[in-house]
Amino acid sequence: MTYSPSLGSSVTNTRMRTPDNLSPFSGMCSVCTANCVGMCEIGLSALRGKEATYPFQTDRNQFASEKDYPVDYSHLNINGRVFGAWGSKEDPYEATYPNANMETTVGVDNPVKLKLPIILPAMAKLNWRDYYAGAAMAGVLVVIGEDVIMKDPDLVLENGRVKKAPLIGEMLDSFRKYGRGYGDIVLQGNYDDEYNGVLDYAIKELGATSVELKFAQAAKGIQGLGMINGLEEALKLKKRGYIVYPDPEDDEVAEKYKVGVGPRFEKVGKLPIWNEDHLVNRVKELKEMGAKRVFFKTGPFDPSDLARILMIASKAGVDLVTFDGAGGGSGNSPVKMMNEWGIPTILLESILYSILKEMENKGCRLPQVAITGGIAMEDQVFKALALGAPYINIVGIGRAAMTAAMVGKTVGDLLEEGKVPKEFQRFGETKEDLFEGLRELRQYYEDADTFSTGAIGLYSYLGRIKAGTQQLMALNRKFDLQSIAREDVVPLTFEAKKATGLKDYNDLLEDGLKLL
Image (cartoon, rainbow, N blue to C red; front, side, top):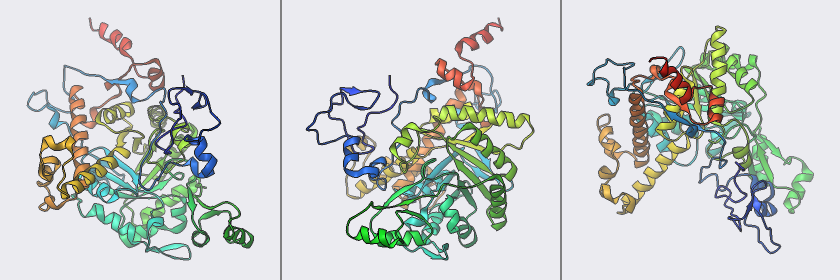
C-alpha cells in the first residue's frame, strides 16, 4: 500500500482524470492518455513550472499534509479508571470534571499564567485579528507569524533595519485589547526578520513582552519561496536585504526580463546560520532589551538536531520550545514538503520524551516544551499531554483554531445580512442564540455584545477543547495537569507500541493479574 496521496488535490487545485484507477507508487493515473489537458499536478507543472510546488492561493487558504502516516494519535486509545482521584479529594462533589484544573504557567523568570495549556502557533494571514483577540479572551498563548513586515504597506526601513512597522503594533493590540491577565501574544522572527531587526524594534518601540526565534523558514524547514511580479518589486526586495533570484541588479538580467526573457524573479528566505554561542548570546540580548520571555520554534528535524536545540535552550534559559510535527502547517510550505518531510507528530513527541528524560538524568535544566502538528480536538490534546508527560505540557493548535475564527466571522457576516446558515437554524436566529461563548464572555467584558463573531467563535471552540479535555482527565481520575501520565494512553498497534514505548493492553493485563 502507499501512504502518499495521488497527484490530484484541492491543495494544488488539481484532480485526477481517472481517480478510481491510479498507479499507487507514482500517484499518476494508471493510463495517461495523449489528449488529456493535464488536470493533475504534472499537467499544472507543465504550465507553471516551479510555481506548482506550492499550494493554491496561500493568501486565502490554509493547508496541511494529505499523507496517511503509518502511525498517529489515533493509534493510541485513552485509558480509564474507576478508583481513586489524583489532584482532588476523593469526594464526588469535588472530583467532578468541571473542577479539573487546566491552568498552568509558561516562563522561567517572568512566568505568565495560562487558562489552558494551549499555544496557538504562528499565523499572520487570513482572519488574524480574531485569531489574536480570541486567544486573549481564552487566556492562552498566540504567535504572530514570521516575515510579517512584508505585509505592512507602511513599513519604513533605514539601512535595512525596521524604523516603523505599524502592522506589528496593530497585531499586538489585537490581543492586548482583550487581555485579562492570562496568556500573551508572541512575535516570531525568522532569519530575515533578525537581519531587519524586527524583534528589537517590537521590544523597544512597541513593548513586546514575548518573542520567538524560528529555526528555518516557512511552515517548518524549507526556504520560503515567493514569486515576484515585476522588476521594480524585485529591486526593492533586494535592497531590503532579501535573497532574490535571478539578481535584479544585474543589468543583463534586467534587460532580458523587460523583453520577456528569463525566469520570473523570486524571493527566497534565508536559512538560519546559527550556532550555540550566537543563540545563547541572542537570548540574553533580547531579555536585556526588555523581553520577559524568549521562545524557540522548530520542526521535526534529525533527532541529533532536536537534542542540540534542547541543550541550547537549556543553557540559554529559553522559556518555551515548540516542536512542530509533520502533518501540520498552514500552507506556506511546498506541497511535497508538507507530505513527505519530517517526523510525524506522535513519533516526534516520543523522540523528544527520550531526549528530555536523558537530559533530566544528566542533571540538565529542562526547558518547557510544547508539541504541535495536526492537533485539532480534545482527544488529541489529552493524548499529547499524556504521551509527553511529565516533560511536554503545552499543546499547539494551529489550523483548527484559525478555522474556528474564520467560521465565526463568516457566520457573523451572514447574520448581518439577515441570513442564518441552515445547518445552524436549529439553535436560533441571533448572535446570542448561535454563539454560546457570548454568555460566558459577558462575565468578563461589559462590551462583549460588540465583539467580533470570529473572536467569539475561537473562544467558544477553545471552550469545547477545555471541557472535552477535562472530561478525559476525569475519566482517568486526574484533576490537575501534573497528574496526567503516560499510562493514561495505550497503544493499539505494534507500530504505536514500538514508537512510544508504552505498555499495551496485554502488558497492562499482566500488571492486573499480579493484584490477584
